Image 1: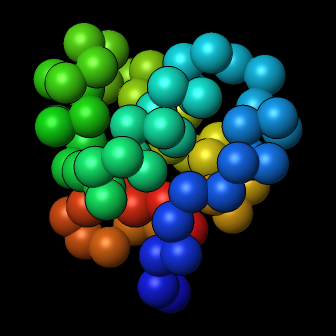
Image 2: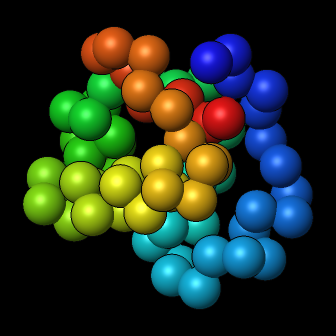
Image 3: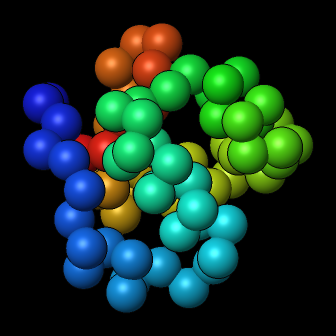
Length: 71
């Protein structure tokens, strides 16, 4: 699946400020590894996994190993 980039309406669908932050970060950086995401945003790995799973389940994120990118 190819990344299409930032989708402004996706932010309105996200309730969590951290999920919005992760989505915006991945949009601005054209994706990142989980380690980069955690380091740059100073969030725990477990938190990042929960957020990225939610974004993936909503079709907003894809894994292009080893990077996570906005769908």
